[in-house]
Image (cartoon, rainbow, N blue to C red; front, side):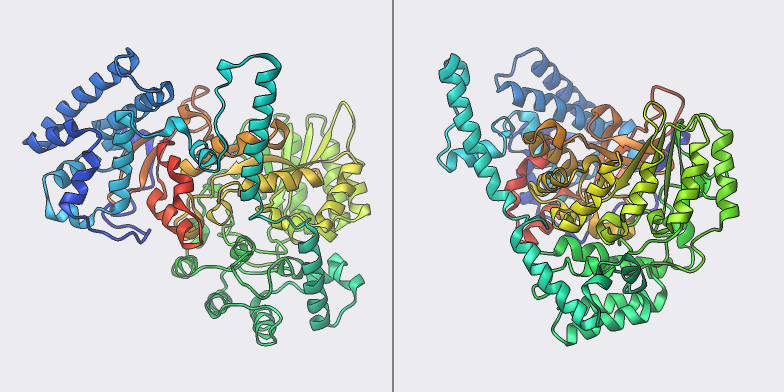
Length: 637
């Protein structure tokens, strides 16, 4: 078994944690976790060895599982289902297989903490305690999950649940419709926290901010809306830092000193950093991080990220290659991981740098010199696609290839159009967000001219994080593309700065307004330098179940996925694709990820340490959220 697993936990001492949760729990406080199931506490206290505890706990859990399945425990049917799930998770965690997969024994920490072991009590955190408190509540059928998180809130707001099974016909229909209207009006109170860039007030504010920047740069409106001016005035290196400092000193854009210090380090150590003027004007100039945290944090690197990038600046090409792209490139510029699609990396840079970029080992700065590999090299890569008729879908990416010239884009399209086996040509770009004015009529016409009904489609995969990024400029750009018959799909990286209740619902609505379809909700690449952007896997699943589900089906076709390193996309919606096998002292859940090839061909599994739920909830509280709004997160395994 050990040969068939790749571990992400073995590189860290399990008793050390990057998450900053306070270590140390009083013995009496720890024993409170057993209130729903005192039988487990008794077994742990009276077992003289770990193996004795394992056998007795397994017997207890298996009997409990059978009682649930046999209908011997009288609880709500939803709580019964959760009890079965939670008990199965507990059996996984205390099993020897789970220990081998996790690389340590969760049971040993649980057993020793229960018996008052001072060392263990000194290193476990509230995150560990809360995991087991909720797990045991679920196992006992007393979690309250069956009422949901929203139901009690609606009742408290005077919106009483209607038992539709007791009324029939038009009376039932009217009662249901009235209740659903009230439910939506309550949800709207959450959505109001997430203004769209299409809102009149935001449009007017940004117009004023744009005018301030135009005056600062000494340019006309025509120049501002010229993508070539945007490209040539990206804030990067020393000059970009100097511009930020000047804007701050002039009182045009407030930039916290800590942000400026991190950018200074980025410039000094050549860590990827850069912002387009268009994206800068999406900020709230006078109230940093109050309303614009989600846009600032995409481009302003936090301290933890900078520390890790600096330490590994010499070996980052391999250290940060989370997906193992070095090992999936059959020829220069091509990455192939799947059966019928491969990537053509036509341009190794972007107009703007996302801090959480998957390719931060490769994309080193905006418009980096030498990023265009030359046509001869692209030609050889295209020859590879011509020789492999399994390639029905080609994704041209980078970097951001739409930053290339119309001439080069046209040449790439022309070559691909010669290949009868290529059914779909897809361009991966964030230009719609960072420099939407790059989508000119001529570019849209070039792309659209290669659509051949019944033979070939052309599509755009883009990357919006928040409704705040969806602007009138975006609406205009997407309309130009859609008029040419080009589909546009969004790939959201569901990172913590955009993970509040209903925040992604607001994004989906804004995208629909401009004609972009949600496509993927990506769990962020679990790279340790991006700690400040990660969310628990449970939050991704919770969002899908409790928030996205309230939208019409065409607003939420996106699929939540986790990219298994070196292997590819794992569908988080499917329980068959992961197992919870351990909990570290800091409360990190350890998952055994089952990659996409399972059931198709022989493959490996991957061990992944997740973000502690308690740490994530503490973060939400620190930015003004109520953690009680998220309490059901503990029950998504």
